[in-house]
Every structure is written in structure tokens, then in C-alpha cells.
Amino acid sequence: MNHNFPESEAYPVQICTLGRFKIAIDNNFVNIIGNSQDKPIAMLKAIIALGVKDVAISKVSDALWPDIDGDKATSVFRVTVHRLRKLFGRRRGVIVTHNSHACLNSDDCWTDVLALQDVANEFDRMIALPDVEQKIDVLCNKAFSLYNGDFLPGDQDHVWIAYQREHLKDMFVNLCCNAGTYYRGINKWDKAIDVYKKAIETDNLRETCYRGMIDCCLKANLNGEALCAYNKCKHVFNTMFDIDPSEETRSLIRTIKKNHKP
Image (cartoon, rainbow, N blue to C red; front, side, top):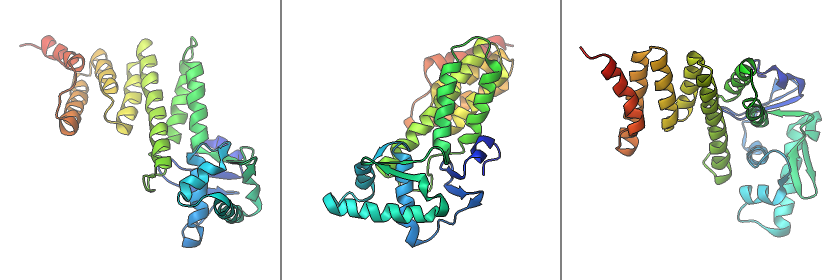
């Protein structure tokens, strides 16, 4: 399903939620269009949005049926989870319910959400170690392959979707920012610029990322690129907040003017 992330191919069920929503079972995409599948698919999305592992059934019910409670909510949940399992055919065991919790069977199901979390956790462990540039490169490339856009971008902004959407975006952008800091520390300006670009493309309100990118461009003698990054930052901040970038950011650009006086 994801040729840029071959680890996923070891799993019979693969679910992508970042930038698009797709399900593959035994390498065949599932047609998820149709009113009869709306609630089962919504349940699947809710389980993923609420954490994938050990999600309280009460949370799933509250997300999908906020006006129903008690025995009726339990009954509706059981019917819907039965329909969801039918959608997975012979892989119906991928949906697990136990002790008032629901989850996806991690032995059979790969999701880009958990894969991204694993990459971020490994990155945090790795970045504190010496001589790990190649490993950081690999982890950054994996993160780039996984994060194809917002979590469930076509879905309404329910609280349970919006929270996970922002959480995953922050996770990815923070990884990029920390990678930029790492690469700057070892004077790899081109690599730092690349990860800062990814961060800004994902969240164009992170001034620290603009500043890191400008600093790298200046140190790499890419003054034109530094000015472009600053102008983009200024345009975004002027448009969104009617303010200029901070003094710290403006001071970087003044070094260009100072060094190029006629």
C-alpha cells in the first residue's frame, strides 16, 4: 500500500489516515463509499483518533452517539462493531473488544498514525546520542513518507478528530524543528534547510522554523533564499495577525543589509 514505507507490507491490514483515508486488506483496497458503511467507518476512525490502543468503548460511543447512553448505547455499539468486522471479511479479528475497551490488533493492522508515533519516539531517543547523523536522516525520511497531510482531512472537525489532527501535526513539526536544530549543530545547513521547509509547509505559523531556516541560509551564503523565507514569514504574520516578525527574526535580515552596503 505504501511503497515508501515497506514495513507496512508485513501486515494484512493497512490503514492510512494522514492526508487521505484508505484501507487495504491483503493488498486490496476497500471501497468505503456508501451509506451502509458510514457508521462502521466512523467507528474505525474514532478508534484511531482516540488512540488506536485500549480505547474506552464509552469514549467511542460518546464520540459517535453523544445523545444516546446506557443500555441503548451498548446495543448500538455492538451492532456497529459487528458491521465493522464484516467489512474486514476474513480479517475481522483486527477489531478487538475486551474489558470495556476497543482497539486495533497491532499484530495484523498497520496504521500510519502509530508508525509516525514510533518514528517520533525513536527520533527522541536517538537525537541525544553522538554520531547518529545517518540514523537521523533515515528517521526524517520515514516521517516525511508518513506525514502526507492532515489527519482525516476530509472529515468534519469533530472534537475527537480535531484534537488528534493537531496533535499529529505538532508531533511532525516538532520532529522537523528538532532535526533542524540537530543539523545546525553539525553544520549541515542543506539538511537543516530541507527539514525547516517541511515544517513551514505543514505549519506556517512557527516563527522559530523561519528563523532557523533564515539562519541556515545565511551561513550557507544563500542570502536570496534567506530573504525569501523572511518575506514569507512577514507576509503570513502581517496577514494573519497584523504584526511583523519578532525583533530576533528581523535582526537576522539586517545582517544581510549590513554586509552588503554599497
